[in-house]
Amino acid sequence: MTQVGINWYESFSPFFHAGLEFGYTEMNQTNTNLASAQFTSGQYAGLLFRLLPIANSLMSFNINLNFRYNNIKGSRFDQESRLSWSESSLSGELYFLKKAKISLFLASDYWVINGNQKDTGNINQNRSFKGAKNQTFRMGTIIKVNPNGEIRVEYSNGLVEGIKIHFTRTF
Image 1 (tube, rainbow, N blue to C red):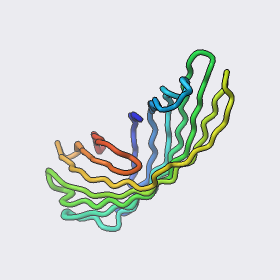
Image 2: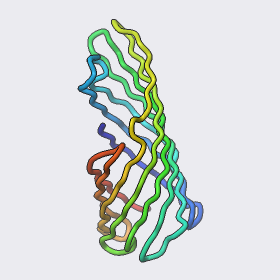
Image 3: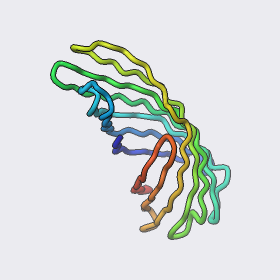
Image 4: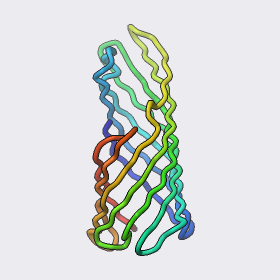
């Protein structure tokens, strides 16, 4: 799965932030026999909530609660596949030297994923699915490029696996 999106947080207090996210998703499932479901694309949107019980120059700890809805589709010949699913996640993130030029972080996420795949055309079927894994562990580094911008490189293992690069700008 490849995603490109925007997250927008507003600070309601030094200890509580909330926001919205939206973006574009492409998903490849080459292990399915249905050609219309092999290459799909669409969009996602979500709500973001962040608590910051500890925040200082040496260390900070975030608790995040996020809800996301995904809707993608693919078609091939006379067949269409539409996938929609919801994701709920709870995460804890521990940052070290958050205000420094280079900082480190460790995180753990717990996910609940429920969805539906509806295929129409020569094959008509409606199948529900759930996430097979629920836990993700993350670690990475954050490089401050200026007072308002940073680059974050993150390695994930579990439900979400791979390397992510985030470009962040604070306004």
